[in-house]
Length: 172
Image (cartoon, rainbow, N blue to C red; front, side, top):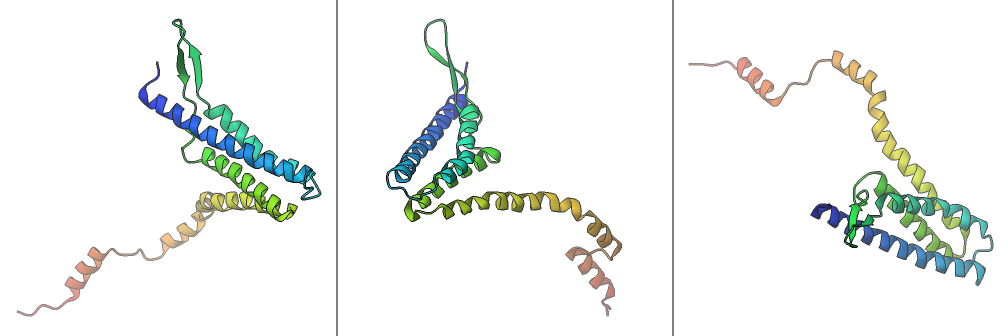
């Protein structure tokens, strides 16, 4: 038996996947028409090669996010698995971003009639490097932190106030 939260998640996942697939179908049909009817751009192999990351991410999102139903003995469809939450942060968010980036590049390719729009896909590994830098840099900064420990520690405001009270000369 699925609870209310599972049913809400299943509905949200179905809605997200429907929007994603609808946008993908529309943009890819327009791109294919531009490639084969208008012959814009002339080289078609780049479209097929560079569309693979977006299609792969879409496939993975479909497999992990699609709710699964089964028939109970009374003949009703019952939710058996809501699928992973597609609204969560992390890898699913990045995969959705890659799909939409690929679709945006398809639109730019059609508008400008050039395969140079695919250079925007270089933003994906550069963004991943930027995110990994924040994750990896603390491991390399350990040596620097140990050197800072040897220097004089920074005093809090309370400690500074107490020391300033001690150094003041009191007259009675």
